[in-house]
Length: 269
Image 1 (cartoon, rainbow, N blue to C red):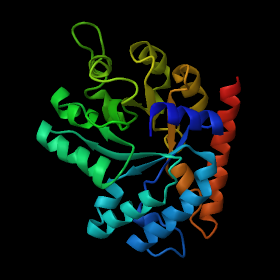
Image 2 (image 1 turned 120 degrees about the vertical axis):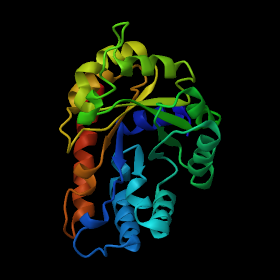
Image 3 (image 1 turned 90 degrees about the vertical axis):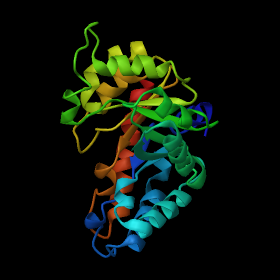
Image 4 (image 1 turned 45 degrees about the horizontal axis):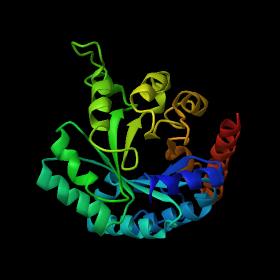
């Protein structure tokens, strides 16, 4: 999916919601078997229920890789069930020396045809370039994350007065274009979005941390939106585990619908 196609879907639906399929096998609702088949059953129901309200899905690969080959097959089946109108993200946080990154890129752009993959930039440009070599695919680079540990490195001040994450955003943005690159910025860092937008004014930002982690959708939108909206706000647990009973799909749809309604209001403000 291209950037223009993604923007078109956002404008069509008046939603920039991305649903995270962080499907913890131990949290599957009552009546769903706690195995790979149960994951597939659950994910298909969630996708069918939430597709009208979101523009993308983010599959956190750890929840599938931890289940071995059956988990991998569940990830493949879940990805295949997502409509072609929706943006798909492999939340894999890969990044290694060039020839290794090339294999990761092949895995998630060819073998599993995701539209995007999350990438850790710690090893530098040659670890990111193999992902950028693909046309009509997005490399989503970790910028400022929402976890407490982001203080350890990302928020350290450099000698030039910049935070480390600001230097990362500035340098990485020069390696590609807004048509092939996005950045992760956590919703719990909403006050930093204004300064971040000065560094990456035209890129899409993938925003985790709304919902279960307590980030404010209104603040993220106010400080982070650009001319093309430029935001994909991810909600995982707050949507997919809105209920642990037989009505889980219905409750997920209701939760996604509430996000979409708020987004529509914010877009028209």
